[in-house]
Length: 231
Image 1 (cartoon, rainbow, N blue to C red):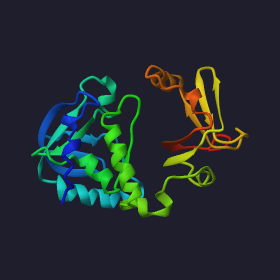
Image 2 (image 1 turned 45 degrees about the vertical axis):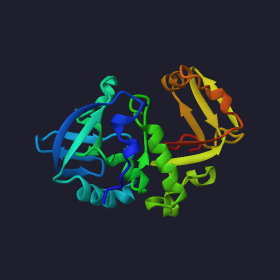
Image 3 (image 1 turned 120 degrees about the horizontal axis):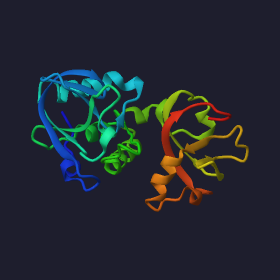
Image 4 (image 1 turned 90 degrees about the vertical axis):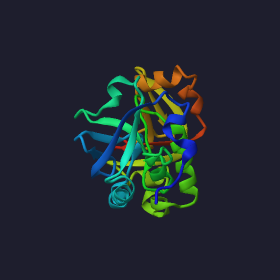
């Protein structure tokens, strides 16, 4: 059965002004984060990411809890292009018809999905991260799998071309032409580096979050790992 998470139902959040955009019956589970409704409209479950190894389990959860059932879709009306993907499918948060079960929240709480966000799409990321942290501490779902735990700098080199959650202590912060680099060792040519574009850094700065202040701080980050000098 779906986990009841009434305190985190999207319409009750103050993180963003989410609006109810649709009531519909789900007729098909297209992916672990994608639903088709009776009208043919396709929705993406916003602000989560399912590890590939857990695709089948996430699909089973959705099959048990939303397939052939009426649900409510919510979205932020003020995020413009961030509201749809490149194919025009709408990104949304989903609850059961009675509004008592937030589907993304339940999936994260059960260790079936990571919380995920971007500059454009960050609705409900704070409660999702809180649910994720509890799931991690309790080893729910994929958090019990060694290959999906929070990665260290030594481990990250084995995770190229994959999405990971990483934790480490920032050795130094550098800036070049508006792009910020958070380095986790003295040799930036081989260490782990987090890259923040000008747009990302500006987003943080306008909210009084200054990347330079993270030197010598232990932080946790998430995103796609690629090899450029180090990971």
